[in-house]
Length: 296
Image (tube, rainbow, N blue to C red; front, side, top):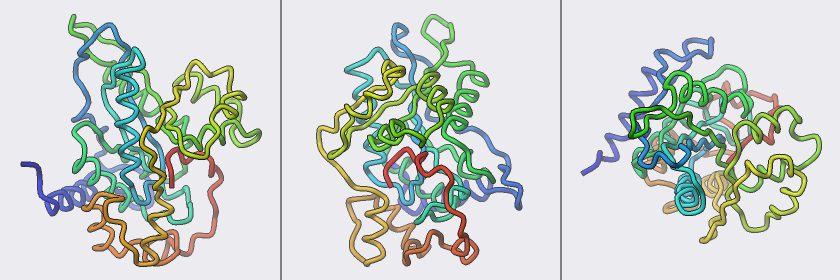
């Protein structure tokens, strides 16, 4: 039997107070350790390429679609590629992103941790991006994962005792590819870095013309994998926040423990971007709105 809902809430709260909250105003982690307890330690098939999935986003709040994207990506990798998935990470954006509807990093880290632990055996939440004082571009976040996995950990072990470098890819919705194909939204340097060095798994969404977007990204097409959404799901954090504001039910759209956390902390009760007086007073808008990789 898995942990109870109250245990999950307590565990998330305890973890936040000891590891994931910035120290004072420095934006630095207290006793930060890269989470790797759910990572595969050894490849099952050494003939394949080890793959790590990373989803960056607001997760305000996290929805079942955010979690479902990882399962779709894992199925795609298993049946349509030469990759072997060794792990998956949710990386909430920092408070410096200042997007409308963005509650504090403390709450978003807690909600994503509760959701991952309650509903998955292989997903983890890395708070590194969320607790940074300054906004971290997606390229920098991917570099962080590459460093932790391929430098610190030196890749992953194979059955013959050797170690292999892990391919890090960004997991995102189709709207990300549309922004990448729009002139002036992303710098050429960032496109080269994200699509050239790492690559991206894109989950299709109804109403999004991926073919047109891909046509302008030809130099990196070999590093872009498109995943069909066989059962359409267009739930988003934006819609969830609207439902909550109108006091409508969001049950079965987001994990039940996350709903309980939201109710316990009084989140999303107004149209503001935060749950604290200080954060409601923030007026500076995001300088890189296109960099939220997952819906909402």
